[in-house]
Length: 108
Image (cartoon, rainbow, N blue to C red; front, side, top):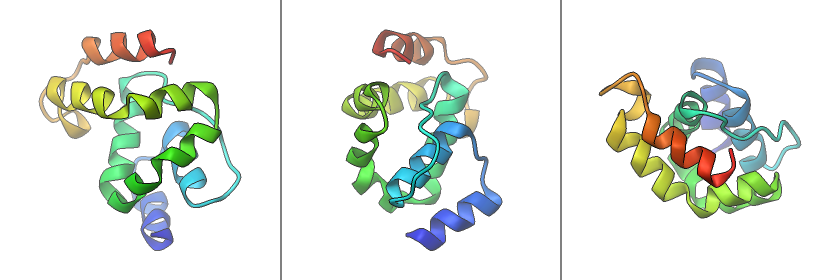
């Protein structure tokens, strides 16, 4: 998995929240940023697409912050909302107001 994470760092779209995911899941100290908006969320989903086995370690993210704990608790709902509304990497639309409202309601 660490090789896939390194490859994603080298070739993927990396933001602070997706970097926090990668570091934490790899067991390394790093940023603690959570996704603040749908664009940040998209980068997190792209990370999970590039490193699918990281999904098995999502619970580790709860340790990063109370906000991450809330996000992990409702990750499936948030991800489904985003993918339904705009698709992975914005393939269906360019705006995700429903997902953004859900993220704000959760505390992002």
